[in-house]
Length: 549
Image 1 (cartoon, rainbow, N blue to C red):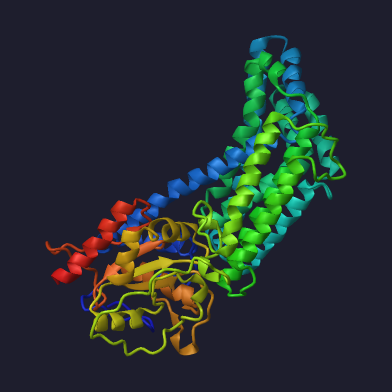
Image 2 (tube, rainbow, N blue to C red):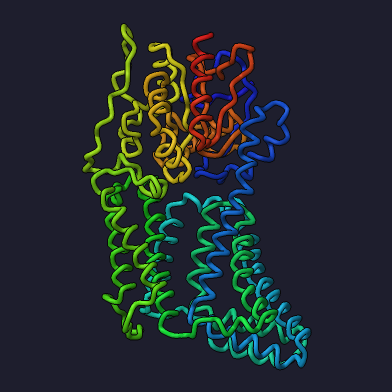
């Protein structure tokens, strides 16, 4: 017999259930994942197959995202003043010292492989030290998100030239001495020397990448991120050893290398604000509203634009007598992006970046407030005078949709209005959730279905609101005490539907059962689906099933 925690209504049909710990989740599997997956696999014959598949399907995509981020970070590191000037020196060193081109290429390959081994080893050490559970905890933990915010601010200031983050010089000297030994170990220590002496340039990039990998919560995240980073970093050394004539076409070192560093510093500052926003939303500090967030991004974009055209100069910058063509085009792109964000201060949706911004409901001044009110059913009255948790989630409200935030209240309203329920398992820090709301739910046909034909129940699985003492309970699955609202809803998601990723959409009847089509088959829940036509069919199938019943 399943244990139904306080605040859950038992469905009419008996459901075989498991529960998970009261831990928060984001748009990918988070803290309960490492626990829940094991037991869910053991009871897979008793669980709904589609949700489990959707959770598993997100992991490769997440790792690919981390790998690509690492790859881009590695290519950016190559353009740093600590590494770029070393390219021709290192390649010529190998080709001349080896005595033959074949041997020089082999040494360059070993040099690149050594770089990869060192950085991937760093990622593996972090994975082993923290483990998957600890990495998952970092995703929505307030203290660590604040730490990440401050860390990225420090990295950004470092790139702007206020100071340099370096490793002890004695370590570099010792590694350099070992590199003179020759052979394979000599090549390895040469690579290690590069890693250490270039740390003032690569350190902030590596730190930002590891922060991003940790926030994804995957055990292999740091190692995969370092693989992408080191591959991009090692590739030029090997490629130019194979084709040394290509060195002649490289731009000469100069002030432009420092400009790359400064631009990355501005980007670090902008990226840091996302972590502060995560904490602000989950803990309801109400400090970083959408227009405040946008104002800071616009200010950073404006300063970056002025820097690119030479109107803003730091003490370590060289003179800029004229603008090069590439720099001009980059300045145009940054200026255009900055101007694009300005209408957002008055409520423009800014769909291309909406997933990274605080929800539109946090906007204090909105000129686009022109969406019709939710429809009601004639002759129906709702006896509930006060929505539970409405004040808590007012900042996450989707404009024009009348959402509910408590499971039992949604069941009661469904019975009164004779409408099916759609549960939106969502989260404050869920990027994919914001993408669905802004790109899919905003479609007129989809919006009309959600507004007029469903009882929308939004359950935030990463909210930190404390439950009342009488509502707190021990999870029947993990034995852990669930004390906050996010833990309660994440427990429901895994307990009833065998899933723990967001967004996750479930359609129920007024008794809390999954809707069934005309053939009696249950309509399985859906993960994020950015195909508007497909998602519309999913909703219409639920409406037809409810009417058929």
